[in-house]
Image (cartoon, rainbow, N blue to C red; front, side, top):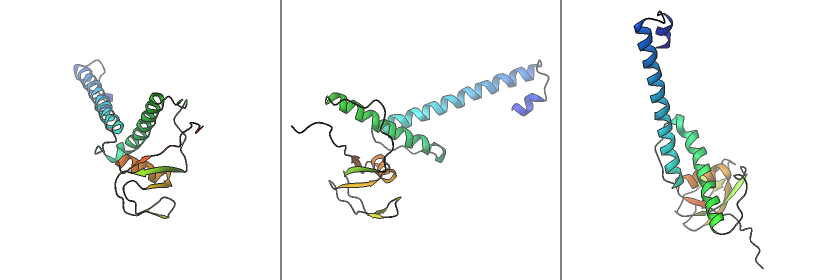
Length: 149
């Protein structure tokens, strides 16, 4: 459309209508993207899965991680634990508790991990752990900062 616009007299009715149509389409595309990201954000807060296009995968992964940090922030605040000022930086490994049985996997470290039974606890590479958390197969266990005395 923009190519067609360049070849028109900018004051012509056709050029003006084409320009308005282009602006409408751009607004609709932005609104569609905002709605998709909003849906991904909503589902990531509940650990639910949403079918995403390959181009949306990065957003789903980032929003899932952000939602997990957001939930931890709320939980810590409610439990009287001082939340950190920013989300945790990516770690090499995460401590997990499995909420579902899981067959063996080959981790990003090229080691075999598992199989795991429900309620098993394991330390896995960050990328694998994040994936299992997003799938609802495991949850992260964070050591408490509270003193035992």
